[in-house]
Length: 326
Image (tube, rainbow, N blue to C red):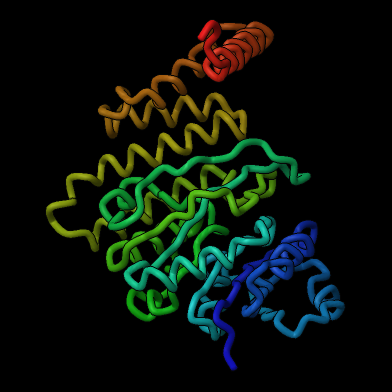
């Protein structure tokens, strides 16, 4: 009898994290699943390691390197489940993830993709912060055209029927090929979000998402393809989509890669392509911090950051303190 859920894990030289990632699947409270690990031309000992896996639900597929999209497609084509959940080989699931997403899709037949919130964690798995929801569920197609609402590839569970309808991942797009995929699904199906952080989204130096050049080239390619398929009344949003892409990469260059010169360049591209973005609070905050960095010495900049952080903590404490004298 076919499993209800197929879990697809694209893996490329991921043995540092893969055993922990797989273990988080095997510990799920929902157990009617298969796991398809796609060895995408790895040069580590993943095949030897797989011989130690005794759970018959876990399968290994080895192929020449095709990239993330190609690995996902191999998983989709071999999946038997009614629903397909994707999991990056360096991320970890909370035990109730599959159970809650399965129930959501069963209860909402109009929904094609169900998302979750995430914990951002470091390379050691220590929690950094929790990302809140950034959109309302339902018909999100128009919003998805200008902003990737599903930035972590380990959160979505997708109805298998979606891929029969819109096709598989575009393997010519490197980097954000998943954004391109989710937009196509959003054009046909509603999205839903479970407002709980059910994924530990690992941030580490070898992650492809930290390579700003790859993400920029792939992002521009994805945007062009998405708007080739978009209806005429939405074509005006293309510049906004470009602007948001440059902003997100500027934020990543500044906060994750600490590449401040690149962050400045990307911010200037935002202003050049979509000037309206400069009025948003997020952009003003980011650009101000970048200018402050170049104005002050590194020591002075760090001191200002510490003071701002202390003021934020004090503000939160005052807000959360109950009123006195009542």
